Length: 254
View (spheres, rainbow, N blue to C red):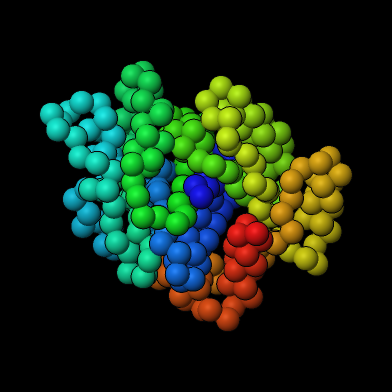
């Protein structure tokens, strides 16, 4: 199963959700691959920490190869990096992705990620983190994925962005990947005692939006998780937020 975590709005928790779900899958014995297509490299840093700076091969090198800069390009497996967590590998990002995207788009390389993943054996699950824009890398991820998870940050701006986002996914499905489906909207930073989040969620449900039943609470603990480069299941297995990520993973697994 390949899942892409996608939202054109920044700051809604894409990297956090992708990394924590991937870490849970690996902790449960599933061989898991995390792909970081965002030039900011937040997901890569989350699972590799300072080791990210030591990587000699990143996805920027992989996409360089696609542009024909190497006579004998290497397979995608050559760019996979092991994380400190058993069963979890990552294809790390690189700031140079941003400068490559226009060349890649002009040469219509959007199907190459899917083709390369089709030739990459051995993974039970793949989670793809995307940049906060519908650019070449996001389109490549949506074309390569089986399903799409959409983080929703419980505010009116995020709600407005959802409608455009759903149209974008439908367009990709119609034109490039008929197998792609929206697996659900992940409610993030949820505050159960506040009126606005509950009202927004109920209104979206009333509109037929596919809101998933496992909510992720707002918690300062996630900042500590980022700072220590430890997904929640490794930082604090008994924390409420860890339980919520596990519940979300279980929901998706069924």
